[in-house]
Image 1 (tube, rainbow, N blue to C red):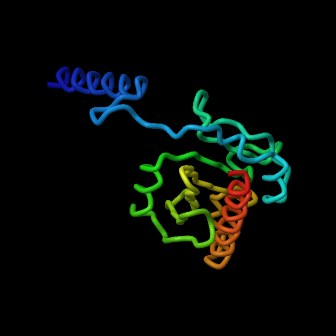
Image 2: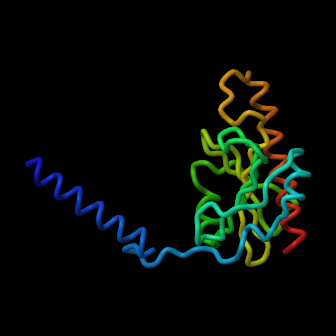
Image 3: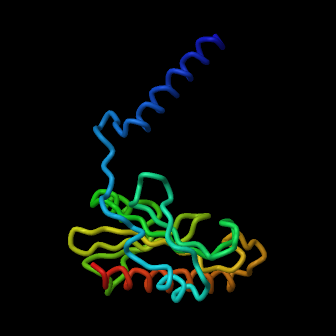
Length: 177
C-alpha cells in the first residue's frame, strides 16, 4: 500500500511540475500580464516615498518582468523597507476584487481601485487605468512586518502608513501611464 501511495504522489508531483514548467493547466495556458514593472518607478521615486535609500528595482522571478521590488539599501530582505509592484491581467484584478481578502474600494485612483489585506502579508492596493492593471504592496515598517510587540494602536499606525505609501506609489505610476 505504501509503495502505491508513493508512486501516486510521485506521479502527481510530476504532473504538477510539468504544469508549472510548461505554464499549461487543464483550463489552458497560464496568462501573464505584459510589461516591465521595474520601468514604472525609479529608485529615487521609491526612496522619496519610503524616506530611506533603496536599491534599483529587481525582478522577483527571473524571466518575469511583471513583478518588481525595490528594497532598502544594505538591509536583509526580512527587515528591509520595500515597495513591490505587480502587473496584473484583467482576470487577476477582477478575481481578487471580490475575494475573501478584499477590503473595499479606493476612490480617486485610475478608473478603478480597491484594497486587499492578507493576514500575515498586509495591505495591497490594486489599480486599473484603461487596459493597465497593477498592484502595489509596500513594507514601510522599520525592522520588518513581524513586530509582535506592537500594541493594537501601533499596528493601526503602521497599517495607515502602509496604505499612504501604497497610495503615493500608485499615483506615481498613474502619472507615467
